[in-house]
Length: 89
Image (cartoon, rainbow, N blue to C red; front, side, top):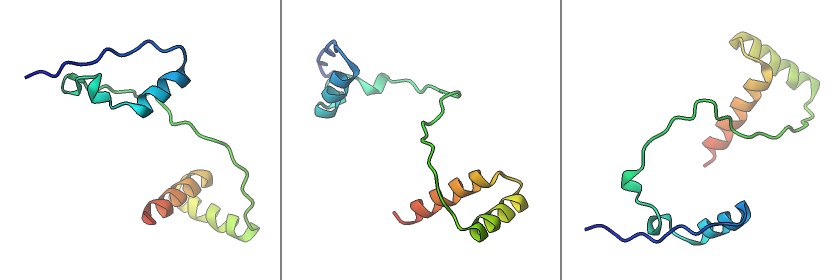
């Protein structure tokens, strides 16, 4: 038994489309059993640059730890921050 799907409306803007999908269930409009997995290898997560002031001693300790791991210290800071946030869930 197949569910009759509603037609997806035409949207005038991305804002209008976002509002629509926030207020409606996609299963009324899309047969997800027919969905296919896709790979987007070049998709990069969006990021925002921030300025962070650290005590000199702390920054030097982070740089030493990063050097021991052979990674850039900025990458190590991001990894440690993500791990800390994830551990507090």
